[in-house]
Image 1 (cartoon, helix red, strand yellow):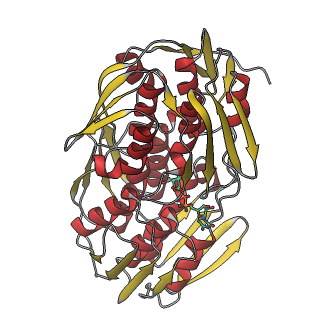
Image 2 (cartoon, rainbow, N blue to C red):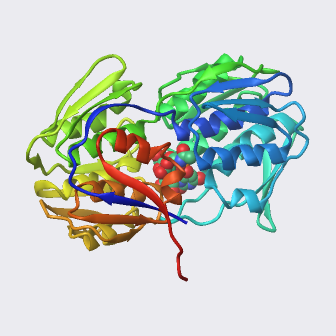
Length: 424
Ligand code: EPZ
């Protein structure tokens, strides 16, 4: 296995470019299944394990994919299988994204139920509800979701989501674009990843009104076409790199971003005392000598993202005062707290809220990644800890951060990747 070895204490400085978004690449890649003719060319796809896992699943269904220099080409002409097996689905929960497109194109799909998750329950009931509203019959048999369009083809309908769900909105969109008639999505997720999917589907010939809002109206069409498309930047990677600058009292410029999509996070950096400026496509952050404690509550977009709260917690260990971190999306997403405390942080968990007492001097040791964002949080802590921090099980981090050690060492961090043997 790989670990990251970090010698803390260097102030980060310089310029770095954000990679393409992982969480928008996945539904975009899934949507290629909707088209039985031609080849898609997708640019700015990050070179990450999750992308390879997902294209592996699509290839199993019959697509032909090729990936180099962040460009993915996909042809779904020869897809015949509608079965997503357990062996591939268990590797990544986002595999559920093949449900909507398969059902829309072939009138049926069989997708293995995704497994559990490192940070609490992550049900899929809203995905299934959405498919039912579009005229699918759903049953769960031998660990598989079996979905079949009752009339052979999906029918437009009204889907009113009781809570905002990125994945269920994405699946509903991909199913509705080829359904007969009109579909309305109420309380749809408005995350940039969904906006990107809407833009992609529209470029393919779908009729979607309300892109970027929580109410989407989709007029089904008979067929869509393969197109060339450029993915959006990764707003969570961007926020993590800015946090790396802030925690090390550094100063960096981040290129290739759309600052508007980062506004909730940038606002918190400003409140914490950072000097944040931006132009059309870049953000510059200069950290103060002393950060101010700043509480955050993670909620759906445009609020502060749940995928940034662990990294924010790491940052707040260095801020003066008490900050409270609440996650209203995943109430139990606090696996990183015991590891941060092992590094010397003082964080209590009270009623689903992390209470961070700062600033605290952190000192390096071995810490264990438990999920993607928890790993990012430990890397940030390692950048400021005294001595050497070893972040073990770094495969979690590799799922979502492209060339992370290259990017951080380019900014002046002392970080390297080493092999190690885990004793079980
Ligand atoms: C996406 O997951 C992201 N994953 C997650 O990023 C992110 O944390 C999450 O959205 C929230 O922003 C991908 O895009 C691949 P949800 P998703 O459906 O779509 C509940 C990362 O670190 N819910 O928006 O699975 C759910 O439990 C990852 O990159 C239901 O109750 O999240 C949660 O409380 C991890 N029933 C809330 O909705 C359902 O059927 C929002 O989840 C679906 C979700």
